[in-house]
Every structure is written in C-alpha cells, then in structure tokens.
Length: 322
Image (cartoon, rainbow, N blue to C red):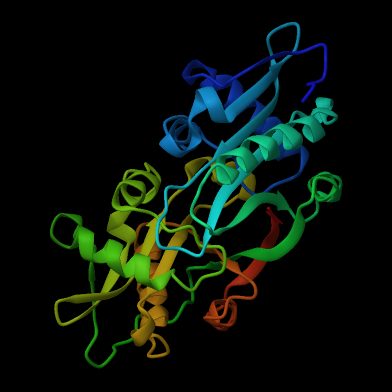
C-alpha cells in the first residue's frame, strides 16, 4: 500500500520508548481516557515476541523526528483452538488523525497475511480495540471491514464499606504461591477462560510474560482458591501507579479472575473478589477496579454490580473475519 507522504516510515525500535509513551499520553489525554500507558507497559510490548518489531510494527515520524502514528500487529501463539487470531493496534497523534486510516489499513494487511499463510483449516479473525466514544475511530475500522462485536465495561468501587470475606464449605482462600503452585494456577486460568468470548489462549511462556513478570502484578494482593490441594480459582491483581493522576484516587486492579468450570456458581468468585478487596484496603488503596465483558455467559457483569461495582468506562472490541 502507499503510505502518506511527508513522513518517515519505519518499524518501531527499542529506543523509541520515550516517543511511544509521549504519543500515547497525547492520544489518551485527547480522548479523555481514565488511564495512562506507563513505561513498564510499553517496555513489555516492545519485548513481546508476539509483536515482532521488524515485521509487525510501523511508525510515522514528521520532519522533526517526532512520532505521529503507530501500527502494530500481535500474533498470539496458540494451538487447539477453533480460530486463529491476530490483534491489530493502530493510533495516530490527535494533530495527525488523518494517519489513522493508513495505519489501520497497513496493520490489517500485515495481520491478514500472517493468518492467511497458515495451513490449518481454522477460521481466521482480526481483533481491534477502541474506546466506545471514539466514533470516528470506530468508523475507520468499520471502513476496513471490522464490526463492533463486544462491549467491555470498566467497573470500580470504593474498598471502604465492602462486605468482609465469606467462608465456603470445602474451599480455602489462600496466598498466591508461585514457586509451588504457579503451574497449577496457570492450568486453572487456561481452563477458566476456555469459554470466555474472544479469549486468546496463552502458553506457559506467554502467561509468564503477560501476567507474572508484568511489573504491575501484585501477587501479595492476589488470592487463590483451593479445594484440598487443588487450585480451583484465582484473582490476579495489579497496580497501575500512573493512573492515579487521571482518576484522582489510588486503586488496585483485579486483572484476571478465573474459576474452573465445575466450581462455578458455588460462591468461589465472590469469595476471591471480597478477599481481594480486603487485601487492597489493607494495602491502603481507595478503590478496587476491574474490566468485564458486558455479555459474559458466566454472569460476571451481574456479579460485580451486585458486589457494589459501578461502571466508569466502556470500550469496544471490533472483529474482522477473513
């Protein structure tokens, strides 16, 4: 494809870190988003093997060398699933929003090429993300064959006044022990998210990179649920310090909550959430926050609202079937 003239186009590089952070901040502030991408998050993306920089990324620099647009494709390594997926990421500096269309087109072509080259007979789908209020951006994706497939709500509640942890027959809520139970927790996660819409299965290496090694992860705030010695559920919780200035409060994030299928509807998720809130309060935070699929078949959205969480933001996931 022909990229817009007047810019230097090249793949992203590791030393682009500060430029990426600055451009993300301008974009997030312009769209009044309730979070900010921080250094650790961008560093993780730059080292993510699923987002191979030389072949799966591009950026636009103006004449002064300032970054004005980013296109990026992440291809998750997965087996044993009915679809092959690639994640499309494309944003442009608010002052150069005309670049976004070209970046979406570029990323869509790269992602499509990655999946179409696979000889496995599986369906192929591209996924993208956008805040729900960025209607111009959503329209650009739709012009390239994407459609809004799902809404994901960010919910939050003060930790003050939350119900205390609840006991469950046959279930123990325990500390996260990565050394002795790490693999069992990963197995519980893999099973718990099998039936979640759009879930991209991770292998052990991916789980380590995206969750355990993430500098935002706080295993001291993260409880697990045990039936005897078996891990049946977990809540992996995180802290994003740079969001404090945006939201005006301190909060911890319930980043992933999973319960094995046969243990659902027994109060395990409720017990994990309430224990998480207790730990978050004890650590001195104001709020507990999480994100959920508004149409989750597990009934997660209804559970969270019953526990006092209220919606503060909503995003959309767009898909394109190849």
